[in-house]
Length: 438
Ligand SMILES: [Zn+2]
Image (tube, rainbow, N blue to C red; front, side, top):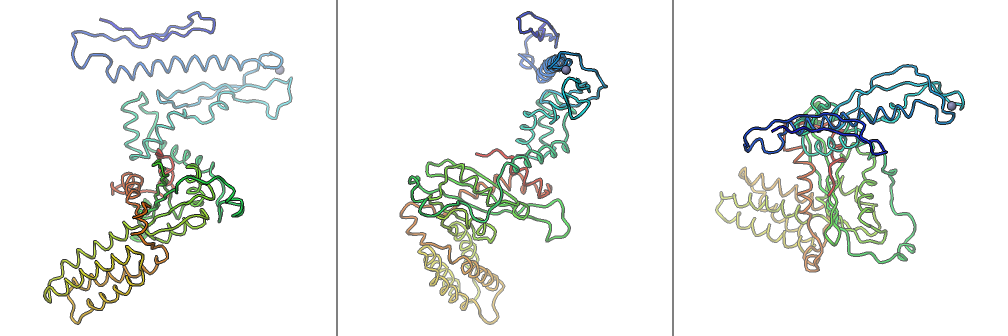
């Protein structure tokens, strides 16, 4: 059996004008692998159909440009050059004519290239979309391999072009963002109160992750911070965002726009939850007058759990010190759960004194060091520790464990897990920008 695939192009009047043979497929006895099209055949059909269509569309377009639209006189040709245009179904070298403007109208230039002007981007929007989408999920090189595997684009793309395209897309999205401001939400409180009462509060979780830098000059410069966040409305719809803190010029604006797109009003209650790092805390200030900032309970308990494990490992000097440490840590957790920072700090002092013995063991020294770090952490974030127990009883959010997964998706999966992958800050920001938001 022979299967012929043709492209037939009809003019607007309905008469067939072009008949182009694309492929002729032969089939013998039916086998699982020859039922329907093979990948190679499908790619050949796509490439053939695309070429026929592109050729015809370009020919028609240049025909339309041949004469002056005002007086109908034929435009003179000055020459031509080759224009390379990439589509998802092939790279085309198009003959782009340079024409003289007709003298019947005043013009700022003598000549022009209609095709070069029309196709100023040189890459089809759908190909740009695919490149950005996949390279936000995996490396540029793998994205190229995937697209080449399934589309007839062989040499049309390579890792460098894809990277440049993703940068360009990221920059374009950035350019659409308004200017950075110190305060958002203009107007006064009286005006805000006039607004319709908004629905339930928005919850925004922020967390940072560190990414391996491609411009490593020293150990210290080997990493940079990426902030990832997720904002969730009461009905459960969520949006994610991410940015490179030291690189981004308008981080507040970015978060503000995400919240606005989720219907945030100036009189809306917004709860920010974070691990208390300086960057994330500074960011969330000034975004909304009704915002409250809370230290993430998840982050708090994680640190306590680590210390609990260490305390369990204490054995020398009998079990007494171990029991005391475990009991004190439980009390610290209890006080923090009820927002009683004062008593929590007091208990930390007590425990520190118990651990600070003459000739302490290595394990005791490590636990003491951890405890001191924790104390500083709690002191720095004291203003952001609410009565978690009360909030929990009222069904209010106390943890961003849900953001952990965002950081994992935006940062770890794409940028950290593969340790061999190094990032430029620009690359990271463009990638996080063009990552599909859900
Ligand atoms: Zn004219």
